[in-house]
Image 1 (cartoon, one colour):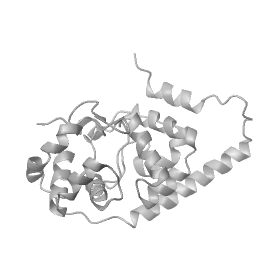
Image 2 (cartoon, rainbow, N blue to C red):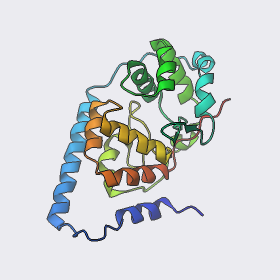
Image 3 (spheres, rainbow, N blue to C red):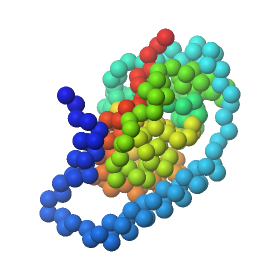
Image 4 (spheres, one colour):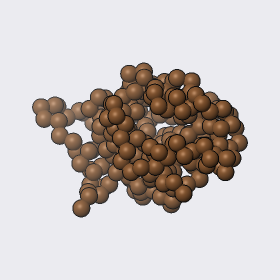
Length: 231
């Protein structure tokens, strides 16, 4: 059977680093304080830079979203190159989906297919598609996700994405249940500038290279996002 989230978090927290000296207690405390302060500042900035959203019409969006479900509605559907599974959308909020689509249209997010799709949509159509996608397949997120989830390296992530990976704000994505390889790819894009966002770019730069996969594994094993199935 699959390991529990508690087991995974415990093993990640005890991840072996042979040959490395154990840090002093005051060094650990100082690092944790820095992370906490950075997360708080980023959260404050994010709260004051919320974009305005158009009011989406889910019924109209359903007519437009059939192309989206051709990839996002298939379990385990993979992007060709680089190879990773396309993200689950079931459970994401309309606000975040709208921000993502506008990012592809503006070129701050890079992906040929997604950029072509987003470029063909007006602001209102983006809002409509987002409203529709946010209205289906979100039962697990709505139920609250995994209780008692905790991983020390995810402390800064929790400020925006929630303690258990369920987003605390409609403008920020839920990470719980997302495909591990997609999360790795997204973090790498923020780190190398392929995907632009002032908050996430700064936050991703603080993550040690060896921690990227650990964070992706942790969030992927939490209860949350689902593959969006066509109705």
